[in-house]
Image (cartoon, rainbow, N blue to C red; front, side, top):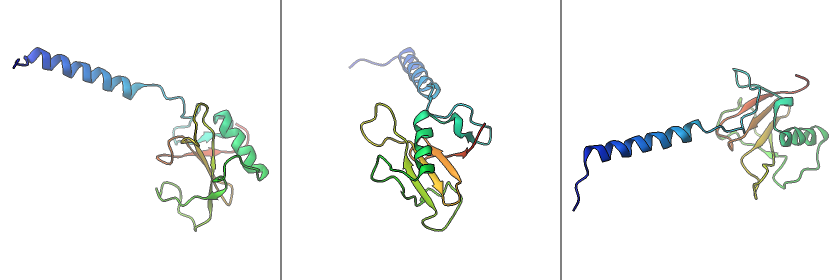
Length: 131
Protein backbone atom coordinates (compact mmCIF):
# COMPACT_ATOMS: atom_id res chain seq x y z
CA UNK A 1 0.00 0.00 0.00
CA UNK A 2 1.30 3.42 -0.97
CA UNK A 3 1.96 6.07 1.71
CA UNK A 4 0.51 9.54 1.37
CA UNK A 5 3.14 12.22 1.66
CA UNK A 6 2.70 15.57 3.36
CA UNK A 7 2.78 17.44 0.04
CA UNK A 8 -0.05 15.29 -1.33
CA UNK A 9 -2.16 16.13 1.72
CA UNK A 10 -1.23 19.80 1.34
CA UNK A 11 -2.18 19.72 -2.36
CA UNK A 12 -5.53 18.12 -1.53
CA UNK A 13 -6.24 20.75 1.13
CA UNK A 14 -5.33 23.50 -1.35
CA UNK A 15 -7.66 22.07 -4.00
CA UNK A 16 -10.50 21.77 -1.48
CA UNK A 17 -9.93 25.34 -0.32
CA UNK A 18 -10.12 26.64 -3.89
CA UNK A 19 -13.28 24.65 -4.60
CA UNK A 20 -14.96 25.88 -1.40
CA UNK A 21 -13.93 29.46 -2.13
CA UNK A 22 -15.38 29.21 -5.65
CA UNK A 23 -18.65 27.81 -4.35
CA UNK A 24 -18.91 30.49 -1.66
CA UNK A 25 -18.08 33.35 -4.02
CA UNK A 26 -20.27 32.30 -6.96
CA UNK A 27 -22.37 35.26 -8.07
CA UNK A 28 -26.01 34.50 -7.43
CA UNK A 29 -28.12 37.00 -9.32
CA UNK A 30 -31.34 35.87 -7.65
CA UNK A 31 -30.85 38.42 -4.84
CA UNK A 32 -32.49 41.56 -6.14
CA UNK A 33 -30.21 44.28 -7.42
CA UNK A 34 -30.55 47.44 -5.40
CA UNK A 35 -31.18 45.69 -2.10
CA UNK A 36 -30.74 48.28 0.64
CA UNK A 37 -28.48 47.64 3.66
CA UNK A 38 -31.53 46.77 5.79
CA UNK A 39 -32.50 44.10 3.24
CA UNK A 40 -35.38 46.12 1.77
CA UNK A 41 -35.75 46.04 -1.98
CA UNK A 42 -37.77 48.36 -4.17
CA UNK A 43 -40.48 46.59 -6.13
CA UNK A 44 -38.96 48.07 -9.29
CA UNK A 45 -35.71 46.21 -8.52
CA UNK A 46 -37.35 42.78 -8.22
CA UNK A 47 -36.85 40.25 -11.02
CA UNK A 48 -39.34 40.80 -13.84
CA UNK A 49 -41.23 37.63 -12.88
CA UNK A 50 -41.70 38.95 -9.34
CA UNK A 51 -42.99 42.27 -10.66
CA UNK A 52 -45.45 40.38 -12.88
CA UNK A 53 -46.59 38.29 -9.89
CA UNK A 54 -46.97 41.43 -7.79
CA UNK A 55 -49.17 42.93 -10.52
CA UNK A 56 -51.35 39.79 -10.44
CA UNK A 57 -51.66 40.11 -6.66
CA UNK A 58 -52.66 43.77 -6.98
CA UNK A 59 -55.26 42.77 -9.61
CA UNK A 60 -56.59 39.89 -7.50
CA UNK A 61 -55.52 37.17 -9.96
CA UNK A 62 -56.03 34.94 -11.77
CA UNK A 63 -52.95 33.07 -10.61
CA UNK A 64 -51.03 30.50 -12.68
CA UNK A 65 -50.40 28.05 -9.80
CA UNK A 66 -53.02 26.26 -7.69
CA UNK A 67 -51.13 27.03 -4.48
CA UNK A 68 -51.03 30.77 -5.16
CA UNK A 69 -53.09 32.91 -2.77
CA UNK A 70 -52.89 30.20 -0.12
CA UNK A 71 -52.26 30.95 3.54
CA UNK A 72 -48.59 31.27 4.41
CA UNK A 73 -48.05 29.89 7.91
CA UNK A 74 -44.75 31.69 8.71
CA UNK A 75 -43.40 28.50 10.30
CA UNK A 76 -39.88 29.86 9.88
CA UNK A 77 -40.90 32.85 12.04
CA UNK A 78 -38.85 35.19 9.87
CA UNK A 79 -41.76 37.50 9.11
CA UNK A 80 -43.54 39.61 11.72
CA UNK A 81 -45.92 37.51 13.80
CA UNK A 82 -49.50 37.99 12.68
CA UNK A 83 -52.77 36.07 13.14
CA UNK A 84 -53.26 32.90 11.08
CA UNK A 85 -54.48 33.79 7.60
CA UNK A 86 -52.80 37.21 7.55
CA UNK A 87 -50.00 36.14 5.18
CA UNK A 88 -50.68 34.81 1.65
CA UNK A 89 -48.05 33.35 -0.68
CA UNK A 90 -47.58 33.61 -4.43
CA UNK A 91 -45.22 31.79 -6.75
CA UNK A 92 -42.63 33.81 -8.63
CA UNK A 93 -41.77 31.67 -11.67
CA UNK A 94 -38.12 30.87 -12.18
CA UNK A 95 -36.99 30.58 -15.82
CA UNK A 96 -35.70 27.09 -16.55
CA UNK A 97 -37.44 25.46 -13.57
CA UNK A 98 -39.85 22.62 -14.29
CA UNK A 99 -41.68 23.14 -10.97
CA UNK A 100 -42.67 26.14 -8.87
CA UNK A 101 -39.05 26.84 -7.96
CA UNK A 102 -37.89 28.60 -4.80
CA UNK A 103 -39.04 32.17 -5.40
CA UNK A 104 -42.14 33.54 -3.67
CA UNK A 105 -43.88 36.74 -2.72
CA UNK A 106 -45.57 36.73 0.67
CA UNK A 107 -48.15 39.46 1.10
CA UNK A 108 -49.93 40.53 4.26
CA UNK A 109 -53.56 41.53 4.53
CA UNK A 110 -52.43 45.16 4.99
CA UNK A 111 -50.21 45.05 1.90
CA UNK A 112 -46.84 44.45 3.56
CA UNK A 113 -44.84 42.42 1.06
CA UNK A 114 -41.79 40.16 1.29
CA UNK A 115 -39.76 38.44 -1.41
CA UNK A 116 -37.81 35.20 -0.99
CA UNK A 117 -35.58 33.66 -3.60
CA UNK A 118 -34.44 30.75 -1.41
CA UNK A 119 -37.73 29.06 -0.46
CA UNK A 120 -38.32 30.84 2.85
CA UNK A 121 -34.74 30.67 4.19
CA UNK A 122 -34.63 34.48 4.04
CA UNK A 123 -36.93 37.34 3.11
CA UNK A 124 -36.47 40.83 1.68
CA UNK A 125 -39.10 43.41 2.63
CA UNK A 126 -40.44 44.97 -0.57
CA UNK A 127 -41.00 48.69 -0.82
CA UNK A 128 -43.94 49.03 -3.18
CA UNK A 129 -44.59 52.01 -5.40
CA UNK A 130 -41.99 54.04 -7.22
CA UNK A 131 -38.28 54.05 -6.50
